Every structure is written in C-alpha cells, then in structure tokens.
Amino acid sequence: LGDDAAAGVSVANQIVVFFIVLFSFIGLGCSVVITHYLGAQDRQGAEQVAHNALGINVWLGLFISILTLFFSEQMLGLMHLPPALLPYARPFLALMGGTLFLEALNIVLAAILRAHAHTREVMAVALGMNLINIGLNSVLIFGLFGLPALGVVGAAISTVISRAIACIAYFVLTRKLLHFHARLDSLWRFSRSMIGKILHIGIPSAGENLCWWTSFMVITYFIAQMGATPMATFTYAMQLSMIMMILSISIGIGTEILIGHMVGAGELERAYQQLLQSLRIGVGLTVLMSVLVVLCARPLFQLFTAQEEIIQAGAHLLLVSLILEPGRTFNLVVINSLRATGDARFPLYAG
Image (cartoon, rainbow, N blue to C red; front, top):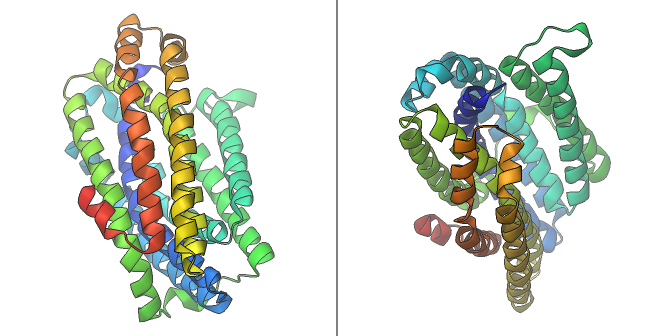
C-alpha cells in the first residue's frame, strides 16, 4: 500500500507489541514454574499454576483491550507520529489493540504447552495462524473475490480472525494433550502462593523485556520526527532484523525449557553444560544468518520498496547486525537460562 502505510502500521504495531510484552510476564513466569513442578514430578502443582496464570491474563487482557480501544489516538500522539501516517495507524491500533485479550490467552496457553514439551504443536498452531493471516490479508487488503478493498483495516481484521482461531486451537490442544480443562472459577479463585511464584519469575522477566522495548519505542519516537522516509527505512530494517532474531529467541526458549526441567530434577551441572552447548549453536547460526542477510540486503529491501534512498540507507543500517546479532544471541540464551534457574532479577538489572 506504500511506504507511509508501512511506517504508520509499524508505529501502531510497536504499541501493540509493548502490551503483548506486558502480558508475557505471566506466560514467562508460569512456564518456568511449571517446568520446576514437572521436573519434581508434581503434575497437580503444575496444573494449579496453569489455572492461576490463565485467570490473571484474562483480566489483564480485557483491561488493556478496553484501554487501547478508547485511547488509541492519544497513544499514537505520544509517539509523535507524522500527521500523514495517522490515517493508517489509528484504525489499525484500535482494532488490534481492542482485541488484545485474545493474544493474552494465546500467550499463556502456548507457555503451558511449551512447558510440557509440546513445542511442535505450538509451532503448528503458529504456522496455521500465520498462513490464515496471510491469506486473509491478501483478500481483505486488496478486495479479492468481489469483497471491498479495506487496506490497513483489512490487515487488522485478518490478524484478529487468525488470533481467534489460534486461541480455539490452543484450548483444544491443552485439553487433548494435557487433559487441562480451563475452569470458569479460575477467573476469581486465585492461590496467593502460586501467583507469588509466577510473579517472582514473571515480573523481573517482563521488566527486562519492557526495558528493551521501551528503549526501542523511544528510538522510534526520535526517528518519527525525522519524517516518513526515515521511518519507513527503520520499519523495513527491523522486519529483516527479526529474521536474524528469531534464531536466538527460539534457541533461548528451547534452552529455558530444558534447563527448567533439569533444575527441577536437581541436575545443575547438566543444566550448565546445556547452556554452553546452546551458546555454541546459537552464536554460530546467528553469525551465518547475519552474513546472509547483509549480503542480500539490497534485493531484500527491494521486496518492500522501490525508493533508492530507502534501499541504500537500509542496506547500510543492516551492517550493524554483524556485530549486534551475535551479542544479542549470547544475551538471550544466558538470560533465558538464568530465568529457568529462578534468577530473573540479574537480567532485569542488566536490562
């Protein structure tokens, strides 16, 4: 739809992701605590943690959804969005933000499944959700099959529908694979000790993520004041950086699950060796991926835009990835490993 549409949606999406990171403190906390209970062979304790985590995120998700729906324009004003981008960003944020409670549910349900080592099923749901999203985007943005062309609004509607389908799939999987039946009374019956354990890990973990994302939003605030073209360059560069980040994030999550089970079983030396092995694999793969993306920077940017100014600036910007991404991988793997042992405070202070 053009560079302005891409830049406007990118800024709106940063606000959405900020709130998703906020939801994730329950997902992160419950995942680690569940792995400890499972490592100690206490399945009943693990189920109690899951019920409490689900209840908290339902209420938090509903509160954030209502807040974003009614105050989307004010939130975008805080980001100093150029006026030309506001018609794209405002409806996108209202729709995406107003249904964030679905994402809050998805985060907890995915965390419960991952903690039980059902990572492939979570991947299958994510893959299906994104394929549906891409298909609906094509239809609703451009108005295929006689439907009206909705543009950016179509993109938001597509995401909401795919999120809702993923939420149903997660509930079915937790019931089928874990025999976990979400109870209505989990919305008001909470265990203080269980919530304490979740928050002990979750709040510092989310705090570390929120530090990173807040700094990222402040940087976006500065770039937004430079105009639409620099904002579009930044938007496309971040999309390509995410490809490199995915490897380190996934290895970090996988290592956290393994180490959480080992710590629960008291196998500390084995957990330490797992950390070292994950670092070797993670840094090696990230260096390889970073080199490939940097070498292909120009053709990759040409997928998004025809503006030579954006392509040239973006290609130069990605050179930083050669130094940045291996360091990020090291941080992510070590942070997730520390969190799996129950130490989420040191990563927060460092963040």
